[in-house]
Structure formats: structure tokens, C-alpha cells
Length: 304
Image 1 (tube, rainbow, N blue to C red):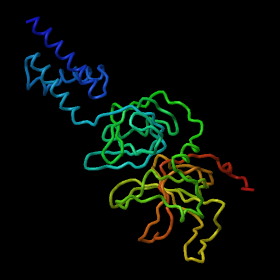
Image 2 (image 1 turned 60 degrees about the vertical axis):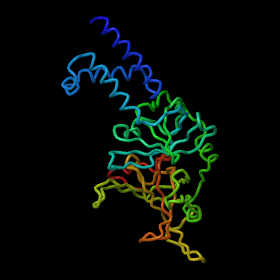
Image 3 (image 1 turned 45 degrees about the horizontal axis):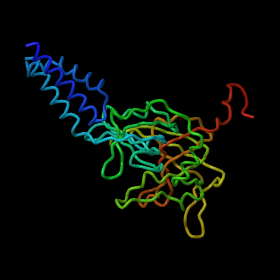
Image 4 (image 1 turned 30 degrees about the vertical axis):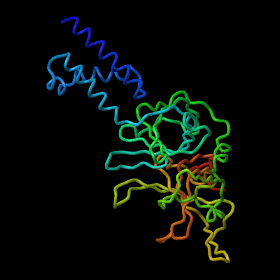
């Protein structure tokens, strides 16, 4: 009996080491999952003898990880949150990042998707920092995906984020010329989420709430810059230069003070229908406050 247990232990050890290599996981992680399954009542109820249970759990682990995409290691610089949604498959967070390594020789902007329990990734990473050795999978569409194998550890400072973004195609814009510089559209008709624009502007006001039709959160800023006036302007060709711009943001960026100077990174679209047809709008994946605005007025004192 002892010999049999020793054999099954060697079997589980070898199989876990093999699975760790194939799935891009640590042996420690798989051992922890193995031990957890060994204590689960539903597993014990199905397979009462210990040796049979160990074989069953090995099969469970292989079934669990065989369906996951193959991963490779990359250097990743997270730029911002592209979107957060609740789908039929659960919570999904998409971030936009500069990615290099393995199958990608030069830095490129990529969308990286995180699902379910991994969708809180935006709370764990620092924007504009360098992360080495991040394990990511790749979809046929070119988008990438991360799960528990994607470890964002030991962030390093990035010296010239703006310069690097420009080298991969990001363009600085103003509110006045934004109408002439929308982000590209894909063949599907959707905006290319990696065709970024960079705008420095002052916050006039901010708002946030919940959509009545879908019970999902929304937030935006209305901003202005030095290139526009107090009123909307109609050009000779009929295009409108608005006196301000609405920028849609993730709620994690809400709450910045009015009159603060900020840098907005995101995509620009020109709606073709609805009340905003023909007006440029920005969907920001990142909001970086670069100026504080005036100090708050103390009660009882004049503004001037």
C-alpha cells in the first residue's frame, strides 16, 4: 500500500510539473489548487479513495487549463482603461498598453482583455510604468488577454511616455483641430481603440451617474482649451468649432477639480447621427492631472 501511495505521489508531482510548463503557471500555484481540490467535499463525495481522488484532480486541472490560450512573456506599459463592461460571460475590463517582446519586436499599442475575477486589474497596476515578464495570450483578432498568469510586478519608471506614444502613432490635438483628426475606423465600423489622441485641456465641469436603460455607470468632463472662444464658431465650410468638448471617462478618473489642467489620452469620434452629429467627442482611457487650478475660496473671503 505504501509503495502504491509513493507511486501516485510521484505521478502527481510529474504531471503537475508538466502542466506548469504547458500552462505557464508555477508549480506552487498548481500544488495549492491540487491541495484545495483534495479538501473539497464534492470531490471527496465523488471519489472516496485517496489515490483515485489524486488521479481525478490531475484530470480536473488538465481540463481546467487546456482551454486557456498559450501565453508568452512581454514587456508591458499600461496606458489606461479602455472599457469596463458586464457581459454574458461576466465582468470584462479592457486596457490599452504598449507591448513589446516575444512575438512583437517593436513596441505597439495593444488592447488587453481581462475577464471575471481578473477584471479588477486596473486597481493593481500603475499607468505609465514598465512591467517586464508579463505573460499574455493573443486572440486571432490581434487583441491580447491576461489571467492569473499575467503578473504585473516590480514597476519601473518610464522616462518619456509622451514621446514613445507619439512614435507609435499617437497624435497631439487641440479642440479646434480635433474635428479634422478623428481616430481611424476599423472595417467593422468601430473606432480603432489604439489610434490615440492626446489633448491638454482645462476642466469646466464634471458629471457622473448611472444609465437608466442599462444600469451602468457613466462619467464625463466638459473641457476647454486656448484654441476656442466663448461661443461656438461655424467655419465657412459649415463645420462647427465648439466652445468646449465633452470627454467620456471611466469613473475611476472622476472627481478632479474644476479649472484643473489635465492631459487626456484616448480616441476621438465624430457621431454621424443624433443630437451630437458632426461634433467631435473624446473617449479617454487616461486622465492625468498636470495642474491644480486656483485654490478653493475660503468661506467669508472674496474671490478676488
